[in-house]
Amino acid sequence: MKLQQVLSYVRKAVDDYHMIEEGDKIAVGISGGKDSLTLLYALHGLKRFYPKHFTIHAVTVDLGFQNLNLDKIKALCEELQVEYTVVKTDIAQIIFEDRKESNPCSLCAKMRKGALNEAIKQTGCNKVAYAHHKDDVVETMLMSLIFEGRFHTFSPVTYLDRMDLTVIRPLMYMNEVDVIGFVNKYNVPVVKSPCPADGHTKREYIKNLLRQLNLENPGVKERMFTAIQNGNLKGWTEYFGSNKIR
Image (cartoon, rainbow, N blue to C red):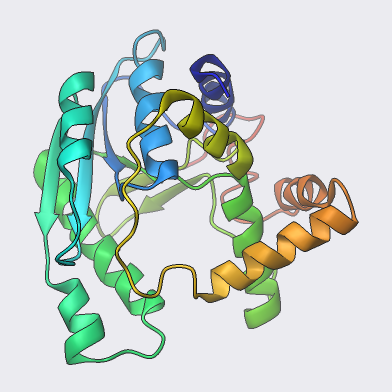
């Protein structure tokens, strides 16, 4: 997928859900994976022509794994002339050594977001962009449905009142396969996750389930996404096709 196509998807999401306002300073959460780096390229490209002026600041939470090398990410940010902050933490040691969590993902995500949000506030950013794509939206809905018994997923725009910080998800119209195509076409310097739980989670199970469902029933993922948009879920109806509601 070409960068121009990525920008088209992102521009539509930003416009549909009023994600960016004049003067926004947006932190981009960078894990080093394909999704977050695609988001970095997209917002860097978008700010060159978007009518509302905004700036971006890349932020990575270093969980403390010894074999994490961020040199390529630092070089990319220098090339794009994007400020880059790395937040050092001991989250990996706490999760895997001190507590020896059998199901580490939930606690890790909570601690990682806490560290990220604190760092973002220190940079002076008022918004943070997460790299969740369409597959993530649908997978989260399925996880909620299967494991929690409710129809729910994260919203395109979320205001965190405790932090006075707004979360936006500009990749929400992109399919994961499109992200993969973009990364391969432009040789994006993806950093493999050093986490030992990577690929062995409930989300991975749901990802495989959705892939199988879509294989057996072509278009089912798109229909699920449409159901989410039309399902009166909090954070979805307040923005789409209307003026922003606070």
